[in-house]
Image (tube, rainbow, N blue to C red; front, side, top):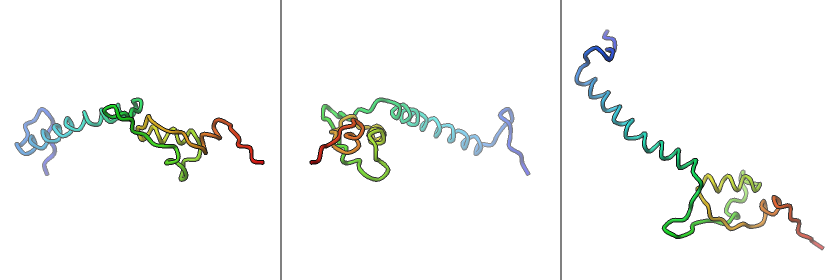
Length: 101
């Protein structure tokens, strides 16, 4: 049974190529992971080549989204900076009551 060689010991060509390939794969993937993490922390910007891409909050109704805070969190997670506010959670957040006579 052969034990793994330390860094100071000589290794076979196959071991060297395997380690080199693993290091190259990590180096190739790392910039993408760092960029994705930075983008997730950045302020949302859904303006693409001057075109404002957005949604109405009606698109986020139901499911687990019931409050204005949950709606805002979902919009930020989706990277949307343009939104048209509709009734529902926004009205309750602003404490606006509709009179019904």
